[in-house]
Image 1 (spheres, helix red, strand yellow):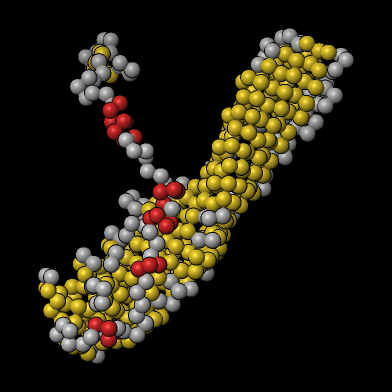
Image 2: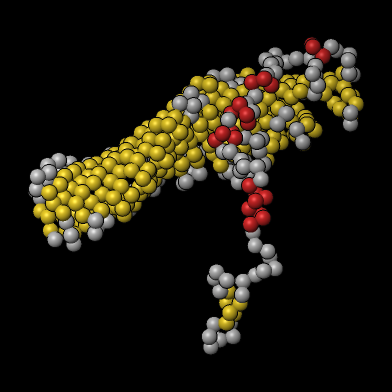
Length: 434
């Protein structure tokens, strides 16, 4: 049977139509043609006076650009807008959507997804409580527990509000935002008041993204932590630049300067340059501190561990010589350039290259309180930690006992699958499911 209307055609085996209420319904599958859309469902009701269709059970919309499936849907044939409830998916060549409540303007390619919402535009994967997306412009917004994942750069960010653009790829995160870089054996997480990724061009005209973080910036990884008021991260050369009173901690060492550039390779620290008033300090005990200062300083890392420091300009160092548990003396050195080598977070050698001047004093000959270089400060209370950064809230560990439960469900190794022979051959094969 066929029901024709100005806006659509309905095809079904059996239809009931009330001429008084102008309501038609079917429950033996139906197919509706409306514009570029073909809609099918097992059960449907059509309110012809309102140009509104209600679908239930195995609902599907076929569009030239995508296929939408849902449990329950309302569809306005005059405006080509669909409202859906229950698990809903949209699958297209350049888009994937999932939610359990929402609407879609199929004529203008605008959608709003609610409840367990997922949007994947093949370049970004976005989840949140509510997502709004304009497919034609590539612009979207997210509200409530939003995450944005870029699998190409192996990064993830999130916040309670997000604004994003597909091309050129950029986003803005606010509402306790965070950003994470993943490596094979560590994860670096950034927190700030506002995070924004924007497209920029370098002097050679090469376009890339630059992440900017503003106000109260904190970074945390297992081997390195830091704080400052603003920072940037270049997706081109993987350099993190910290500004406005930056402080970086690497194991036992605290590092400060006017500005700091951290060069990373595969999301691991490789080199750190500290510009103007560079200072490194490490606590020996509550009253003694190894100290290094200079105009500029470069630190070099192996497996995220500080192994070497080179000071350029007005280099000074104070370090305590320890033999086992015994304090042997305190060395004070000055040189235009100083190179310092480390092992297991301890100074093992100091190399003075230009106009060296140094003296080794016996312990306690000079009061420890006077053994301070200009610019000394020690702030362990400012050091970000896992709890303060909310790392476990972003990436919660598995529930207690979950791993043991999985192991218990694993089949016994001795009880392997049966072996069967392929007919006509001597080759054995594993029979799936046996």
